[in-house]
Image (cartoon, rainbow, N blue to C red; front, top):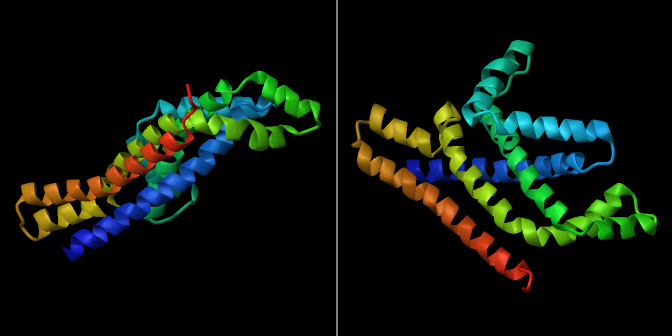
Length: 209
């Protein structure tokens, strides 16, 4: 149980770092995609197109084995979390962009007419209105990211739930079925509360129809 608990905390840490990082990076990429500056729009579009069409495992291998070739060295944990953030940010970006596009163009025009810059218009006028409509798709992306964290664990970040499974079955000879059941329960203890929180948030900010 001590191994399961430490593995759960490690996996929870991967999920939380991945969530925070992907939300920050995804929001930035979404801002680039709707920016009036063509080079930023090109960057945002290229990022989303490239990342969304690459499997997570390819991103993981690129981070862990490609970057050291050019002199960038970090632990597998750092590389794994970074790959999860980069991969998920493309999906977060599209969820946020869909919410931005749901806001009437007149809102942005009104913001510009009173002298607000693009950044001020986006952060103070458009995004607060877009938030209501992005909670459901963004919640789905975050839950999927929590589940994808298992792939990062299998990649070898150490001491997470997947490492507990390999340790108990391979090194200590425990039967696989009860151990993998415990691992599944651990991930459910992460995803089910997250889903409940997101469902509550969705109800609180829902638009009356």
